[in-house]
Image (cartoon, rainbow, N blue to C red; front, side, top):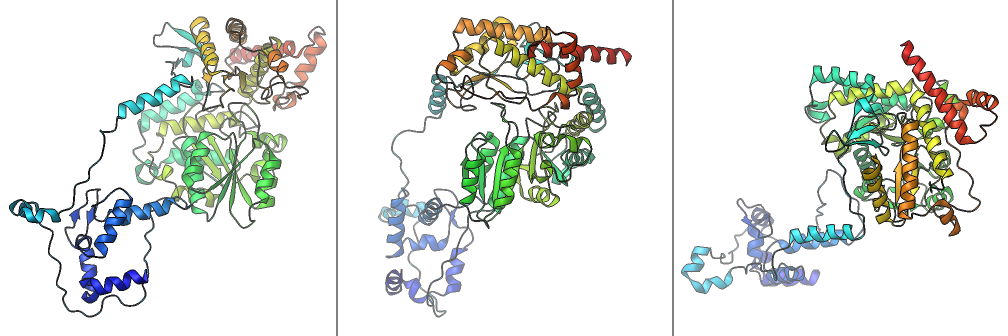
Length: 628
């Protein structure tokens, strides 16, 4: 650098005589020239191209990056390359850093005027005097033809078709008055939906619909803007207060979806905390993965639900470094349950905070529907004593309003300072239009309804047990889990799609196939989600149809997977039975189960008992309905 500086002083008239003030004036000259790559070129950059030292240096650097002859490009491009050559965090709400470079000694001394080099001729001057044309910058040229955008799209789609992961969307129109029925493109094409995430049928709940209708009539369809401009209203305030109460947290913040909530929260915290490390379960949802990517911070992946692997990775990190452990309570594609208490213990031991996604658990577990974290201390929460419970130990809880609560939207809950930090810094919240008042009113009604009523959860759990038992009796390979998810292993993308198509076309049953990238290649499956509306008639129809399709397509059964040594829990030798997370005592059916067993000694199988319990439950609902 020093040798270049000395050479510049000896050869360049600017370096010899120009003042610093004069140089600054040229760098901020009004009406700078346009750059061929966008942006502008200052007067100094234009003149520097004619300097015997700087001109040569700029030409060399421009040539290196493929922009020869474009003034001003080299410096910008080189700084970009340098930035990508090292690990750095993404800065939310900031532009790329521009550092000032100190130079030893005074470069410009004195205030005398310096004769400037001849100006670059204009187009008119160059046309009038061809001898001056050689001084103009050469135009940028590129080899080949224009990029084939349509060809690119076609190639990408062709890849999806070839590996059988192309996604087909069926036209399914759920009917509120005929739940769980729907019609396809015409009202005459009726089907039974077995894969919706409206787990409790709250999308047609009369209390929810009433709240939405009244709010819609009074406040209109839209929110009017983002929360910080015109979308903040009483409905948002009341909904967030209800969510905070549900999770026994100080505050909550509502987003347009839980995908956005996860993405925005992890990206914001990961980018703002110095040297933050996010430890992520290997089966975490795409929204969490994307949020970690957007944070630009270091990511460490631990094996699914493996607390030993997690501890090894935590122990390898300095205690003072901020750490976020991101995981889920119910993993939606396999139905497994996260080891929440053990992860909380590790977080406290190694100075981390916990980020728990309860998306597939809110409304479904716990005495008030707050999720698995609440369920693990069932009696304490049932008595209204959340202090000291596992749920209170969670630092960040995220959930959705679009599954068990039947509406749309997502949220986070945690300490008041945490929530305010995300509210103040997260672009995904700040720059997104608020949910409509009617949606927020409906979501609040759904949460409050489920906080005070366990009947839907009880019925849903019994229907889930009945379907799992019936499929097990027919050697259909259900991936074992303690939750309300019923994943049926197929193990082949093409077969999974065929099975889904045949269920729809031949049996009027809608169950979407789950392929890569939602699940790994070779683990393709059908995912079934019973609801309180899937009565025995629908269950028998489903089980019979699956039995027929497995025979027609020759799909592997549990016994065949077992003969191969088992796979992801199916047919694995000596595998312990997965007991439901909901116990009979928690469901309030323990006494009824004992009574039924005493009354009918012949009913000794669990499947028979479950059907009798369901009959009893339905009789009770009919009696209550008649009395109302």
